[in-house]
Figure 1 (tube, helix red, strand yellow):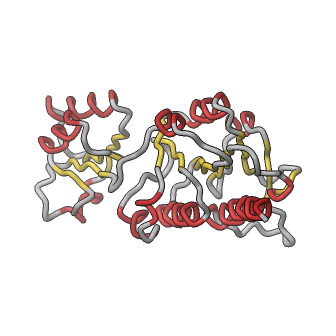
Figure 2 (spheres, one colour):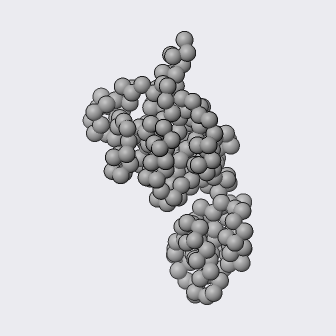
Figure 3 (cartoon, one colour):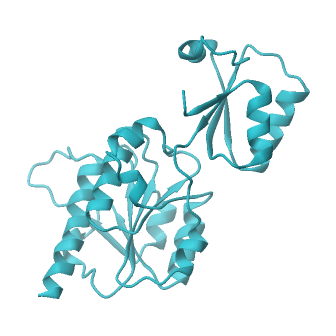
Length: 246
């Protein structure tokens, strides 16, 4: 399997080298703590990498490997840095920020949509959000290779950094007064925040947003998942951009 590293020595060496993007480390609840395991946890904490103690059943798909009760899930892409992204010139550019999206298929579909719509980057948090994995890569149909995926430790700090760099922030919320097509997206750099279906965008991010918008529904039934909702909003920004060019 290309997207895992298994065994205490291999995982520890990957953490020390720092050359591979590690999404998460799974540790069996059944293994005894020792110096190597303690060092792995210490290095993971120092690098902001999530580690999780799980039941031994989680390791059944990896039974053929000598995993020693520890597996590191590796990203198939190298994540981009927000500051380096902002150092480059941007004009009427767009970003998408994902707050708590947990489904790999949704993330893959979002990446594909963003590439088609000319979005210049996608920001995801290092915790409480699906990371780029093999399912995401496959669902994106290759689009993952055509857009920077920017991983940050804090979405609040990332949004504040964007605002300090003269980016406008648009958050989505079902109770917003404005519809997504009421905003003029032209002549500004902007980022659209999308939340998870069950929770929406967090209150801390809503407070930072310059605009809050909703997708109007003709039926009292909110059936759009996050990838569908993003498609509606982001292609409205494309429509406005193309209309201005006429």
